[in-house]
Image (cartoon, rainbow, N blue to C red):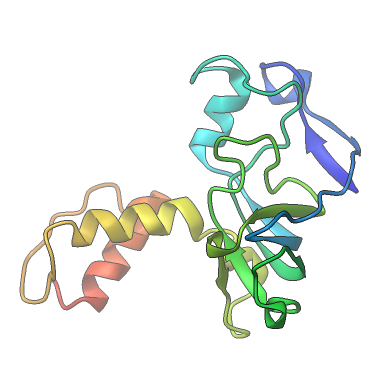
Length: 171
């Protein structure tokens, strides 16, 4: 499969490569997703440039979030999931294979159904930003009838936090 990858930390123009790598196969409890879109988060960039520590693997395919279609499942995963549209999160968390590739394998729970009305590019934006926002808004329970101050509404996390708060009945 084709993938973007790096084998040393540094600026994107200096370390990112695009080439052929082995296509991963799902292990027990995993799904393989044929990716249509990959989401880039600040943590992905910080990892690539080396701000969060040394590389833990000799080669890293970056990016944590994405969206696509499940094309294979590992043992213990319902075969009916093959063909399912999904958005994914934390694909590259504590392992070398992220979503900047044609395929990614990850635990089945990290492949969330994506409704047909939502395009893959939008689905690839959910992952870390939307989940962070959801937990931040709901950390103390329901927000209905409460007034919340959410700063930085132009950023991805705050953008989702505003929408989640409003949907939950907050001002």
